[in-house]
Every structure is written in structure tokens, then in C-alpha cells.
Amino acid sequence: MKIIEWSRLILAASLMAAGFAGAADYPERPINGVIAWGAGGGTDTATRLMTPIAEKILGHSVILANRTGATGAIATQAVSTAPADGYTVLFHAENPQLYQVLGISPLSYDDFEPAILSVQGATVIVVPKDSPIKSYDELIKAAKANPGKLSIGTSGVGGQPWVTSMLLKKIEGVTFNPVAFQGDGPLITALLGKQLDVSGLAVGVAMQYIKNGDIRALAVMSNRPNPSIPEVPHITQLNPAFTESMKASGFFYGVFVKKGTPQPIIDKLTEAYKFALNDSKFIDYATKSGLDVIGLSGKEARDFVNNWRSQVSWLIHDAGASKESPEKFGIPKP
Image (tube, rainbow, N blue to C red; front, side, top):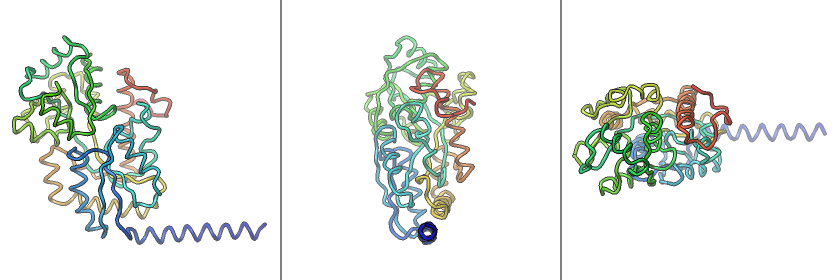
């Protein structure tokens, strides 16, 4: 019996050593990158700008593919079932932190390790350029006069446009008719085609359309002005009741791997994408898009995503839009 036990221990040690050796040489082949949102959206744009720069450090290509659906849960599930070897990487936003309370998926970022949180940003409320709604106050008046009738474009339950609608419901007491799209790209197309009354888009995604006069911006969902569109009022300027909710209402993008991935592999990905974040091209993109480069990894990144989950999960629950209480999943109330 002792001989068998020692054999098992030796085998386990050998496999562990082989794993660490493989991690030290990582990557030895191309990496599969799964983008949880469609082409042309914020996550997609940031990922496709960062990744070619990061490849200079990695020494191998990252083959990017968009895998949309269920507010990013299809991509999240796909990466969660792949081996924890760093060869399947998830490029996603904040959404998995809401999956449990919204009943979308049992997964959350507890099931992943953040190689890096790249940027965070704010949402801007927009309407078509020819909309009769000229201001935020007019939007609220129209929504109150037509409960549940104005169409709001979303990227699915739990996406930023949807969260924005929940904020408006909680603070202003207004409801909309949600129309879901597979990401910001098709949502913008519908907005430009005047198929929607209103939406909430990432500032970076909407900014050029705002500046070109293709859509009209009503308010930035933030406690402060956004330097890329300083002419657009921020929400707490229009209604101070939003102040507390704005502390964690924005979005973030990041690079994640399955939990259990060897730390040397995570470290290599962190190094590569931090290099990308410090590249002048990416900094210029972030500045022009009204994004804050945060570059968080390790414990700082985990604390950030968990604090965001606590704030927004309870906001959604208090607005009566959750399917499960955050308490069920041990999510502390802020």
C-alpha cells in the first residue's frame, strides 16, 4: 500500500512539474481569444486594438473570434469549459458579475482569474438625431406620459443599456420597452435607422456619432463630466439623486482566464496586456473615447470586480429587476 501511495505522489509531483515547465514556456502556440460581444462594440474595439500590441510580448498570435449571445454568457461558458492552460482567453466586460442575480448563468468572475482589467468608462443616454426629445428632462416627461411604451435599445439583460434603464426606473420611476441586440454595433445601426426611441451606449462607442450629429446625447451616466464630450451634462448635474448610484454604475473591460490556470501563465498575459495599455496608440484611443485606463490585475482586480458586483447587484435587486437576491450568492450589501 505504501508503495502505491508513494507512486501516486511521485506521479502527481511529476505532472505538477511538467505543468510548471509548460507554463514557463507559455505560449508555445497561438492563443484562442473569445470576445463576448459583437464586432464594432466597445469590448471588441478595445480588444482588437490591444491584442496586436500584446502579441509583441507573447511571441505568438492571439486568434480573436466574436462569440455573442445571452449577454456574453455563451462566450463565458465556452471559456469556462476549456482547459485551464491559458490557450483560451476571455475578453469581456462587467456582465458576468450580474449573471447569478439575473438568472442568466451560474457563472461569475469567481470562476475566472483576471489577467488585467484594461479600462473603465461611462454610458451616455442618446436618442436619434431627429427625435422630438431634445433633453434629459423631456425624455423623463415623455417616459412618464407613456409608461413602458418608449423603446430602449439594449445589449441584453444585464448589459449597460439595460442597467441604465434600471437606474432610470429606480431614481426617476420610469419604465421603457426594452429591445435587445447582440452588442453595441447592431444597436447603433437600429438607432441610426430610427428604429428606437432611446438607448444607453458606451461613451467611446457613441462619441463619433454624437460629434457628427448622427445621434443626440442627453446625459452622461456619471458623477462628473466626460472630457471627450464635455458639452453633454452628467446625470448628477441634472438630478443629484443619482449621486450614490453613480459610484459603480459604469462598465469595464478585461482579459480573463479560467480559474486554475497556472500563475506564470496569468503573469505572462498580464505583462503582455499591460504593455499594450501603455502603448501610445492605445492611450490615444482611450483618451479620445472617454475611457480611463486602469490596468488592474491580481487582488486589486478581484476587489474591483467584486465591489462593482456588490453595488450593481443590489441596485438591480432594489429596483425589483433581479430573479434572485444577491444574498443567495453571498454578495454583500454596500
